Picture (tube, rainbow, N blue to C red):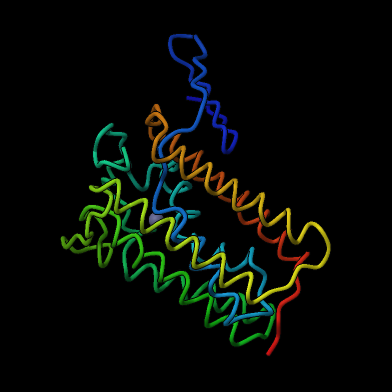
Amino acid sequence: MAGLAQWPWRFWYERELGVYKVVPGFTGGASMILGHYAVAMGAKKFAPRTSLGTLIAAAILLDLIWPALVLLGIEIVSVTPGATAANPLTFVSYPWSHSLLMSIVWGLVFAGGYFVARRYEAGAIVLGLLVVSHWVLDGVVHVPDLPLTPWDNVRIGLGLWNSLALTLAVELGLLGMGVWMYLRATSRRGGIGSWGFAAMIGLMLLVFAGAIFGPPPPNASAVAWGGMGQWIAVALAAWVDKHRRANLP
Ligand SMILES: [Zn+2]
C-alpha cells in the first residue's frame, strides 16, 4: 500500500481495489501529545543554550523512532475505535521504541551525540532526561502496554486515557505550565518570537484536538505516517527558538 500524509491535515490516500480513497481531516493521535511538548518547553530554563527544537526532539524521540519501526513491521499498532475514551490505538507491541530500558538507551545515545556535537553539559543532561521523561509521561496516559525491557511480560500504564476529562486536564494543564516556563526563560527577538510562538502553540492545540476528537485513523500505516509529521513540530520549534533570546542568569 502506498501512502502519503500531510500534517496536521492528514489526507490519506489509500489504494484499495485500484481506487484511491481520500480520508480527510484529523485522525487519532499516537501518544501523549501536549505533555511531551510542555516538558520540553519547561526544560528550556535548565538548558538555556539548547534550542527548543532539540528539546522537543528529545521529549518526543521515542515517538519519532516508533513510526519508522511500525512502517518496517518491527513494531505493531492496531486501530481500535473506542480502545480508550481519548485514544483509538492499541499498542500491540513496541518494545524497541517504548520500553523503559530502551528509553534509557535512546536517552544516552541522544545526550551523548549532543554532547559530542555541542560540548554543552547541562544541555546533554537535560536532553537525556527528556528522552526518558517520555516513557514516564506515556505511563500516565496509556493503558498497561508499556514494557520495562524488550523481553519481559510486565506492562505499565495508569490508563488516564480512559477518562476524557482527566486527559484534557492533564494535557492542557501541562501545556499551560510549559508555555509559562518557556516564556519566562526567554525574551522575544522580533515579531516571529511572539507570533511564531503563538502559531506553534495553536498548531499543537489543533493537532491535539484532532487526535482526541477527530475520527480514528484508517489503519496502522496512516498512524505511522501521521507520527512522522511530528518532525514538523521539531522544525517549527527550532525556528521559533531562533527568534527568542534565552534569559541567562
Ligand atoms: Zn510515546
